[in-house]
Structures are given as structure tokens and as C-alpha cells.
Length: 153
Image 1 (cartoon, helix red, strand yellow):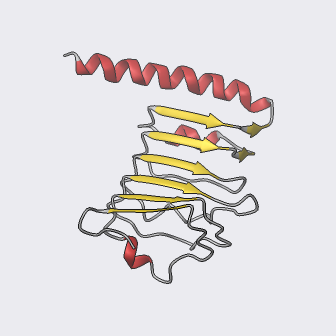
Image 2 (cartoon, rainbow, N blue to C red):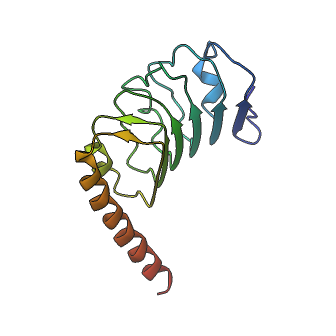
Image 3 (cartoon, rainbow, N blue to C red):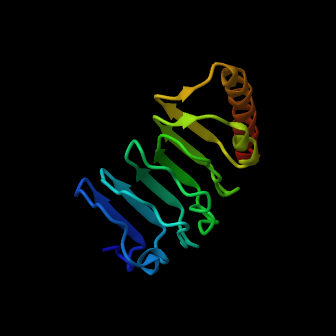
């Protein structure tokens, strides 16, 4: 059960096989960690208007529904282990960790204008995306320098 008093939910490694029947239990959460599960299906969308941090680990053959992140307008930090599917995130996202992600398309990363930290672990992508990743690394470095310069004003 989530702790509504403190605004977080952590359930790691307990072998949950089904998503909770109601999304209402997540609505007041600012942080959710769902790691080490054997879920077979995610809900089409998750309404978490206050969510800032999401740690999500999915089975190898599971995809993220296209509209899953739509109700997470304030999300800033995302750690995601997923093998496939189309990924669309909130524009507020500042930190993104993709673990063992099979990405066919990385263009969606351009939409993340506030992104400051991007990390991949075990990235499986086509070689033609490496040039784009190099450009993105330079862009993120520029953004980071700009935000650091502003801190010293």
C-alpha cells in the first residue's frame, strides 16, 4: 500500500503479478518504486498528477502502453527498465535512466527540453542512432553549463 501521508510507494522484489485494481491508490503519490515484479500488463494510463519520481522495472516481454505516462505531468525523474514499445514522457522530465531499453527511435528525446541527466545501461539500438546520441550528449552538456552559470548569478 502506498503511504498517502508521506506521498510515496515502494514495493520492490515481492513478486507482484497483477497491477492493483484501482489507480486511485497512486493519485496522491509523489514517488513510486515498482521494481522486481512479474507484472503481465500495465494499465493504459496512470493518473498521478503529483508524481515526481518513478522507478519502474518491467519483464522482458512487456511493453509500456502508449498513454501510460499521460497522467504524470509533473514527473521529473524516471528510471525505466523496458525492452520495447513507444515511449512518450512529460516535458518536465529532468532525469532519465533507461535500463536495457531496445530503442528503435530516439527522436522523442528532443521533446524533453528540461532534461539534464540522461543515462543508458545496456542500450540496444541501431548504429545509426549513435550519431544522434552524440549530438544529444553535447546538447545536454550545453544545457547543464547554462543552468550552472545561472546558479552563480
